[in-house]
Length: 455
Image (tube, rainbow, N blue to C red; front, top):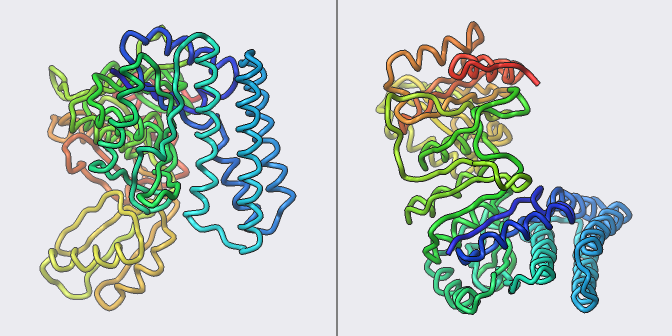
């Protein structure tokens, strides 16, 4: 049994869904469980609807809803021929539209859009797309069963960032999915969305459908996880920045986690966690060209000397440097900083601490003012925004002769506001001015892979 997750561009229109059906049909001997993302841009549209309703712009909310429904109806009309199936699907899309409009009306009256309500909006994307894919499979003679995540994907109630509760989820998933699989049918379900124990819709963070597929695979004991996307696996750099980057044939779970944590968009970072625990390999493939080789992520290590596997970057982060007013043991100092960060909701990507100062890279600078104010009696604070992290990833590269020096040398004369040999030993990280990010990525790619043409 395998799980097959298809991203938004893989189901964005009738032609894309037709390719998905073909890929699934080829995999029927492996007993696939299919996990579907919302069609491309649907999640952004649903967010737009919620924000418009909150701001009192009912016309914009209604117009965006109508356009979203039209897109799904157009896909349905171009792919479903069976009259009864089309009627059922059309009724489901229309009912979703009524629910979205009712939700918008409530938000408009209250003038408030809570994370819980935003998750209610978000959920419609995957619910609609997965229904269409299930119908498209049936249209082509593939026995399929649409499965709602509300029946198994139990999460906590941290809305928009919920986490699965595996001890509840696992038994429910077995009860729901196993009879479908044993009966020779293909379960089709949703990524990204879950449900609290009390039945309220949640989401697990933007782009988290990959994570959903991994959670399902781990709970069912799958032999592999396939992530079908719009690129042929992991590349040595962002193809929007470096022309013709090289496909990476294989990565360890740790390498893949660090690449995605520090900006690579090909996978959600959480995807690696359930897969690594159960030792399930992840294959990243291109749905637009399923014959192309992709990238395998697994527990296997690389033979030969340490080398950089890929370059990534994360834009618009903030470096917060804290200097204690009195010299003290760094452990209590770090504990106090950690308590303030937790209280103020600051998300620390990476930190470096000495007795004389602590430097943190925060995903957002929004909380820096409150953090600095809370710590002003303890330390002085310097906030630097407009910063990007650039990162080279590869097993054991921090200890490899000359690699750290080559990394810094490729950055050149630019100021480096934060530098770290990543704690895992598998990454070299530097914070630089955002204005020079793409040039630095190309310079690093030239240094380690010999290609650096800009697009």
